[in-house]
Structure formats: C-alpha cells, structure tokens
Amino acid sequence: MSDLAFIVAAVVCVLSAGLIVSRKNPVYSVVFMLPFFLGMTTIFVLLNATFLASIQMIVYGGAILVVFLFVIMLINLRPEELREDFSMLSWFISALAAGLLAATMALFANRGTTNDMEVKFASAIATREHGAIFGSIESIAYPLFEKQMIPFELASVLIVVATLGAVLLSKKRV
Amino acid sequence: MGFDLPFNVIADGGGLMNLKGCLILAGVIFSIGAWGVVARRNVLTVLISLELMLNAVNLVFASFARMHANMTQSANNATAGENGQIFALFIIAVAAAEAAVGLAILITYFRNKETVDTRDMKELKQ
Image 1 (cartoon, helix red, strand yellow):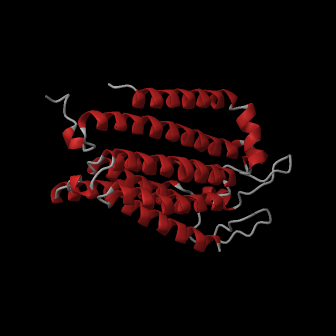
Image 2: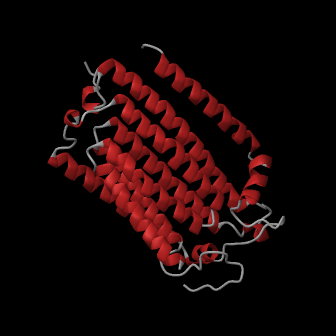
Image 3: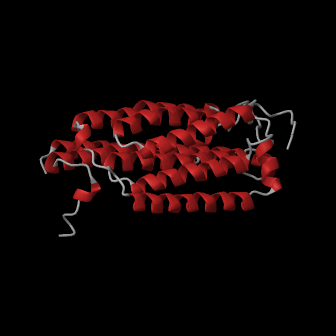
C-alpha cells in the first residue's frame, strides 16, 4: 500500500518538476509547483514526518507559491516579451550535465545504503517515552524547544530580518 | 525486503519504499532543479528551481531521520530521529526568507530595468 503511494507520489513529483523547469511561461511553472508540493507532502507522510508534511503544505503550498504567483502578476510579463530560453546546444549540454549529476547521486545512493541501514529504515517507527509517535508534533516539540532552542530563536530573527529587508527593498526607489 | 515488525505504523518497508528509493528520488529532483538553475534565463524560473533543490534536500533529511528513529534504544540520545526533521524545518524557514528577499530584489530590478531575463543583467561586465 505504502509502496504504491510512494511510486505514485514519486512519479508525480518528477513529472511536475520537469514541467516546472521546462515551461516557458513562469505562470505555468508556478501552477505545476502545486502537484510537486502535494507529492512531496505525500512522501513526507510515508516517511512518518507528519508534522514536517503539514508545515511543508502550509509554508510552500500556502505561502511561497502564492508569493511567486503574486510577483508574477505584479511584474505583468506579456507572453510576447518572453524570449526563447535556451538554444538547442545549451539545452542539450545542460540536460546532459543534469543527467550525469542524477546518475552520480543514484550511484552513490545505491552503493552507500547497506542492508543494515535498510533494516533500520524499515523498522523505524517507535513510540517515545511520552507516548508520542515518531515525527508527530509532540515528539518534535521536545527537542525543538530544549536542545535546538538557540537555532529556533535565530530562525525567528532571520525571518524578521528577511521581512524588513523585503519591505525596504521594494519600497525604496533604488 | 518484507520486515513485518509490530511497531510499524504506516510504511511496511517493502518494494521501492526504502531508503535507497528515497535517496535516488531526491537526487533526481535535485538534478532537475540544478538543470533549471543553470539552463533557464528567466529569474522567476531560476528561483522556483532553487525551491526544488531545497525540497530535495529536505527529502534526504526526512529519510535519514526515519532511519535514525530507533536510535533511542541504542544511543544515549533520546531524539536522534527528530533532529533530522527539525533541520528540515529550519531549511523550510530559510527557504521562505530566501524567496521573500529574492522576489523583493526581483521586483526592484524589474522596476528599474523592465526585464527579468538574466541575459540583460550584465552591468558588471561592461
């Protein structure tokens, strides 16, 4: 069951990623981001990262995608202004390079995963001492607010700085 | 690989849904994103491709977090598995900040130069 869901989600992810990259009009790229994020969320759920999956859906599907769409509408590119992106030669060379990169990473993933790792991966799901399931919001909260508290606070500072920077940059006439 | 352990909640670990499959999928998505960053000339598409690459890295973190979920019993670290997922959460936070600042820069550039094509962005070259 989970196997079938994984295959479907993986196919959806790869297909929509290819469409995101290859569409000439960025509006279509943003539209194809939605099935990509849905497939990614499915895979996170299958990996028992349920809280991560919900955050992925909220932040990417809810915030980042809308911001991209908003910017596309704001700068109002007319279709005839969009020039052809790549010549045939550069398209071929970059596709070849990306294929080589994928092949190298697949080779390393194939070599690097031992049977021991697969056994640990398959038998993963344990309940924690407070009765929380692995990957749930309770089991994330303890390490996040105890051990990783300083990075957590630094992330909030980063987001405040990014917000201020975005407002300043788009307000000022440079 | 049919491991039928009693405390598996969702996935049964058979067939393609294993660590290797997840890592290969992440590699393929990362390569597609890298292809978009290198080959495309529209800044918006380049930024979207960056998001693809960050998502692929998140997938790797979640896979290895699941692999380390049972470290509780062996090591003296009660939350070894969750740390990977927390790192992925931080990556999502940084990705959101990066998208906001990148798009703000893009809007400012478009207001001044009326273009989002990287072939026109060559003031430093001249």
